[in-house]
Image (cartoon, rainbow, N blue to C red; front, side, top):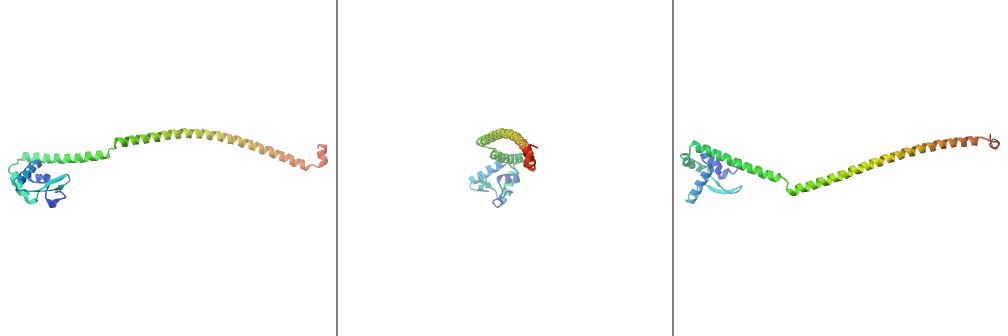
Amino acid sequence: MSDDSDYGLTVTEAAKEIGCHPQTLRKALREAEDSGEPIAGKTQGRYGLEWRIPEKSIESLRGEFGAESTDAESSLSQAHSILSELRDGLNELTQGQKALRPSAEEVAERAERDRRIEAALAGNAERVEELAKESGELRAKLAQAEGERDKSRQRAAKLHQQLKTERGRSWWQKLQGK
C-alpha cells in the first residue's frame, strides 16, 4: 500500500492485486473514463496527476482481468512491475549520484587551490632550509663569542690577581722592583 491509502491504490499496486500489467490497467482506466463511467480518480502524485483505484473497484477489475489473464500473463505482469520499480530506483540513484558529482568548475577550483598550497609549501620548505642554515651559522658565532668571553674573563682574573699582588707590596718594594 502507498502512503496515500485514503485515495486508494496506485496503478502498480492495483495491477499486482488484480494480476495484470500496469499499462493494461491504465488503458482500461482511460477507456472507462472516456466512456463516462470512471472507476478510478486522479490525484496529485510525485510526478504529476496519477490514477488512484478505490478498494471497492479492485474486485470488479479482478473479475474483468482475472478471466482473461493466464499464469504467463500474471508472471509477465509481475516481471514488468518489478522492472518498473527497478527503473524508478535506478533513476533515483542516478539523480543522487549526479547531485554528489562535483561540477567541472568545482574540480578546477580544487585543482587551483591544491596547486597554490603546494607552491606555498615548496616556498616554505626553501625558507625553512635557509633558516636552518642561518641558525647553524649563528650558533657557530655564538660558540666563538663564548670562547672569546671565557678567554677575556681568564685574562681579567689574571690581571686582577696581579693588581692584588701589586697592591700588597709596599712603595719601597715597588721602587726597588722586588
